[in-house]
Image 1: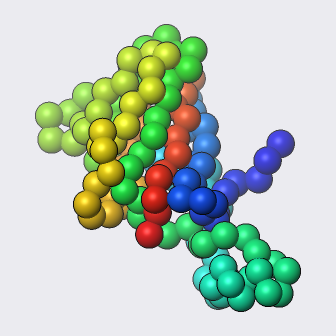
Image 2 (image 1 turned 60 degrees about the horizontal axis):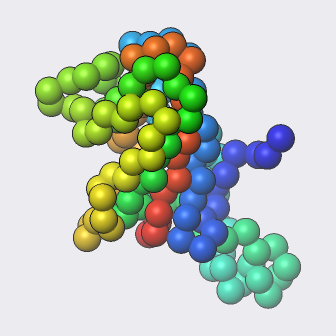
Length: 135
C-alpha cells in the first residue's frame, strides 16, 4: 500500500481515491493528501542532498482530473462542505465510469483544492483524483 502523497511530481499530484462512505456526507477532495511539509527546501537542494521528493503540495492547481470507475451513482464535486446537488455549490456532476476535467482546459489562475468537496448519490462510491500543474 502506498503512502498519502504530499509532493508534486512532473506537474501531476495524485490526490488518490476518495471514497464517499455515506451518501449525503461530503468528503474533502484532499482527504488522502499528507500534511504539507514546510522547510523541505527547493527541489534542487533536495536533489543535491539526496532527499529529493518533488515540490511540496501547495493546495493549488490549474486543473483537476477525475474518474469514477465502477460506481453505481453520480458523484457531485462541490465548492465547500455541501451535500448532494446544490444550486450554489455544485461545480460538476460525474456519471459512473466517466473521466472528467475541471475545468476542461487549464485554468489561467489557481484552483484551491482545499475548498473542494465530494459527495455521492450512492454510499461507498469513489472518485479518483489528480491535480494538474500545481503552483
